[in-house]
Image (cartoon, rainbow, N blue to C red; front, side, top):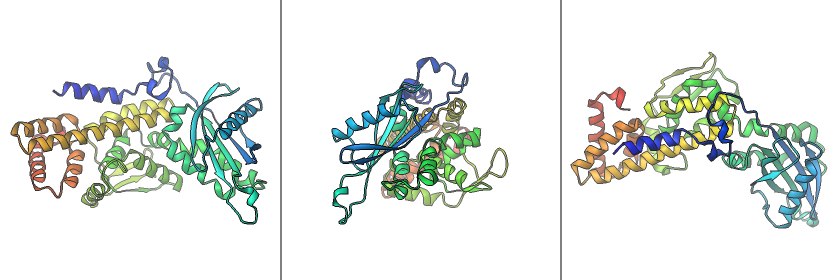
Length: 365
């Protein structure tokens, strides 16, 4: 019965680049070549249905093409204030077709300037593919909103604030997962486990940027927003006695109170292979697949626990499942938190914990 589960896991860990809009010819060798991804930006002032270019890093021949595209989107009402829109655009750039994130930041309404209603700035961030940028939509929305404080119609602070900020969009919004995998290398499995098990962590010996990147990686790998909030809080409180210390003063970083399991370890090579290819979009797709597999296993365990309340055979199947998945410690931690108010389920979970504890604990998880 677990053959299909193993197959499903292999399918999820072997990310097919068709899922991330990459050429199939590149699938054969993750590490055969490094894929550099160019990034661009453009910002316009939008006033009375007309667009005025404020700044752009695009080649001169490509910018009018982008402006024409944005004008069409605005005329159709496809750009709503404060909401990012992602699509594929064809421009006179080496990539020809590229993912484009566009966001209309509306000018603050003022009684003194009623004619400014509807005016604003259109920010465009271009790079990778449409599907790739969609994986970072939350980060892109947040980054563009951070530009709001330095926007004026005249853009007097263009060279000192807006341009440097826009130049960093790819590094700040997309590359953090890649940078953490490059930093931690094979130790990334401990971060994956910390994320799934809601483990508290502390980063020492690092600058603020590195600390922020590690925090963002763990948050991105966690199931926050995908599991019930009260379950999350209970699981965090259970493991608050042991903090993962990540000391970046050594190379590679030294980790204290580190814990992993077979499930997390099995994903390490996929992360390292994608990092070698310098492809942050593929890395994010792998991370999303990692979380999806963890959620699927959690749902399977919940189903088995319900069945085990009525059948000893189902309880046996539950034990086999936990042995096979390699993520038993994490699954039981979440199940224990989620079922804390259900006595029968708690009894089943206690039996499962005792069973696993008696059968070569180090290899079962």
